[in-house]
Length: 281
Image (cartoon, rainbow, N blue to C red; front, side, top):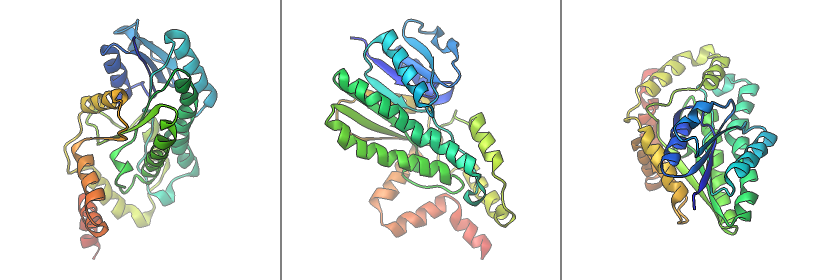
């Protein structure tokens, strides 16, 4: 039996690559995005359905799932990949940007999960994969809203993993490192530009931003993340977390295998905070 997966955020980057990968493995794919790009289906026209879906709009989510059912029948997996980010000083971040990030990254995931669960249960079970980030494990400066949204999804996913087990639905989290080919989306850049840097933060902001640009770990290959998403979606075990990327592996080690003091000291070094303190003294 051919299986079907619905993936959000397929207009570019990881989502687009994941849609192609699942199709290459013989899956039917409902590749969703806010503004459909029909060309994505050209490589596998019999297996890929490009469908409009705005995760912040429950009616749009329902319509996309209905289209998936009409085209392919039962749904076996859902991948929550859509998300946005921004670089900012929290104090100066507009309320509208705060709400936009949470509408997409948190409430959007909830909208998709809420629509997926009864459909998966009706056809005997399935798998939901939530793509988070290394910041779901370890917080970073200048990314406070993105961090907060991803850690919210981490907590939601872990809690749901217990609830949904009773419904024969597996919940998975893919915690990805910084991906080489992924840049800020246009919306993410626009959000970042909405947040002015207060004068009192400018020296710190410039230092922290440079530390981000001088990232101390090699980038994670997008293909490795795509393969991890596929592995999570096809894993019949009750495993929850799938870590991919050298940075996330180190963050996980520090977070879960060292004391709080050791963790804070090493993260301070990795994020450039220790250097900033030395400069400020």
